[in-house]
Length: 396
Image (cartoon, rainbow, N blue to C red; front, side, top):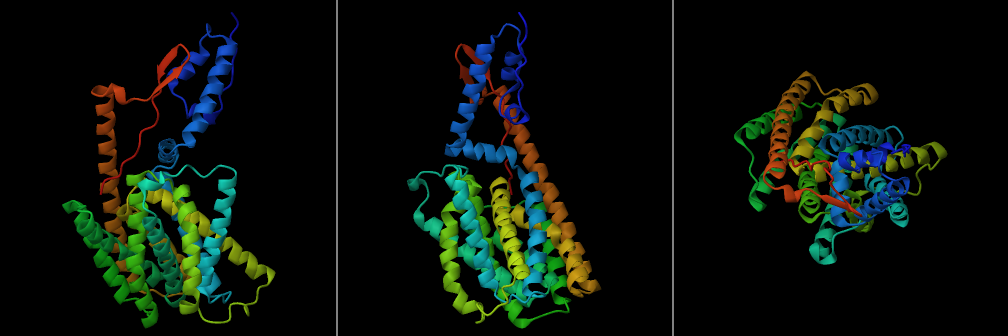
């Protein structure tokens, strides 16, 4: 019997197990059966993406910690430098309005994705109280809005150093409210981060009192925002896009309320020429990518890991601020940043090592002692085990 080579694309190969691929290549399998099997697999994949558990599984498979954090790293550097240019060189001195444009564009993009059925299914209404979604939406408006206000009144280096202070805040909050503890080695690495932050902030020559107060006020909502995003995704099976779709409208309306209080007058008098409008729109697109990448990172890791690993961009931000905006952080600030980054590097190494060890242990338990936990795929008379990718669990 001649062998019919029915090509499998790279996208389909990553969704099906090796056992099914081998069966499709067998010479005794009929072409009609092969076509039926592939159609059934495609239908199963679509159905899986339309369920909460299936969508969450695919998010963890394709956006693990390394991919999500690298994505967030690149986008965060781009948007900070872009917003600093908007608030500085272009003269768009309306940080809350800029944040509103970001979330407004995100809402439009999410509405389009939802219209074409690309927003994954959300958990049942009873699983997550509506008050939790409202709280997250409001907290997001304060976290993002105050971040842009801080970026307006502070140097890029001081802004980035203030973000490091979010790390101990998250650790303390999770210890008090969730009972989550860190190991002694991780505590030492976080202490090194705190020492580096103290040196960098005290010696930063570009100090602004109002900007410093805004930065301090921003720490609490920023920490709360990360904790809520991480817990809702990891404990209640929300995906990044589904949670963004439910909370972005609340954030938009909250920002509308904040504009009269934190933005100066004269928004409509701004020079809305073509170049300025394009720059603001590009910033809004980066804002959508930042929100999405941050949500993916928080869903794949934890609040502490996300903020600590995110501080690796500090050196890039300091260098970008020096080259593009002629900021002068000083030698001592750079030394403090170096100490902080060493602590972050050690913490990240310990966290990823523990996560890999736990993933290996769980994989061994499933294969050796709990074979029934492996997902089974039944296709007509064919019964094969589909060994999908493992979920990455990131303990803190």
